[in-house]
Length: 296
Ligand code: PAF
Image 1 (cartoon, rainbow, N blue to C red):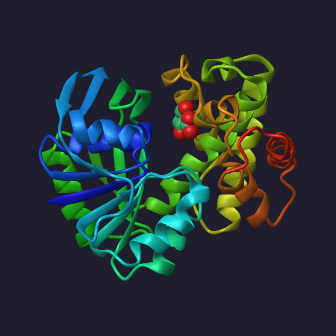
Image 2 (image 1 turned 90 degrees about the horizontal axis):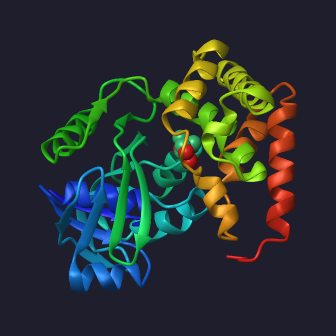
């Protein structure tokens, strides 16, 4: 299968590297990382160490059986516009935040699948990605139910040794992931702490409050996500990723725009009842963003 991984940052590079052990992979990302992969291949270090030689470029290819979209949520619209001219069999989003699949559906003719990915990765330098934690890709029809394209994509991922579940309840899983991101990302970015700092004390209370609010909004929108489930998933992710710096903390420390609008900001936008914790976290991160270093 020809798979284009669009957004070959840390997670995109790791997924692309794993998939390249079995498939014809094209990584689409930024230089100097892409230039180094094109000349020397991609080196994966850490949990598993190997080297693969995917194609690497800075623009999307003309065609692919599958596009895996791994860009930051605020880049989804631009990527969707580029992919609209690409002959695609299917597209899978493995991004953080809500609304990405809708943006892709509006631009593309092919089936768009929803996905979550809990693998851990960090770009160690041009041409090298550190594999920091085993995880799982969960994918399926974005509106839920059975999906033939999801089965096909799931089988291709399994063939490459990627831990994969094809799920019929993606709306609930996307909201559960949103609850975890709403609980962990902004708090760790603002307090500049590792995820494990939310395991107890005031950080744990804040995270649980944000997760509960998100679960309530999910239920307002007809998605069956109990408060306790959102809180226990958050606790589990905090435990499992205790030593990690969340993606939003990494963005803040690098002076980059964050995904706040697609995470806590999304909860605030669609809530029918007050969500004060998500609102405060959103306002604080937006306040930081107004003065950030990189205005891109
Ligand atoms: O965005 C992230 O950092 C991750 O999705 C998560 C699960 C919060 C772990 O750091």
